[in-house]
Length: 89
Image 1 (cartoon, rainbow, N blue to C red):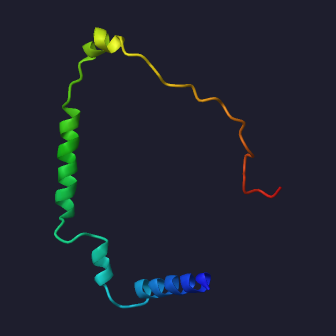
Image 2: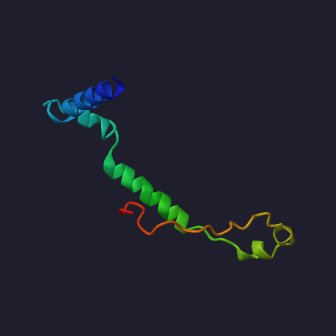
């Protein structure tokens, strides 16, 4: 029963998206009031600001940085499975 209801819901959504002549659904793809060129220009400004950053390598020689301890754990290697898990056995 659940499968039948799910198939009907998917069929209704597919029909309403692809076979109705209503183009109002396209408004969901691009938000209203957003200028695509302005968004691209904003990204270019952000990228230009990031490229202007200068990082000082002296922080790597700072005693506070060098006194930090690494608590990470090595991940043990696991045996790999089949090359193609979808291939017939």
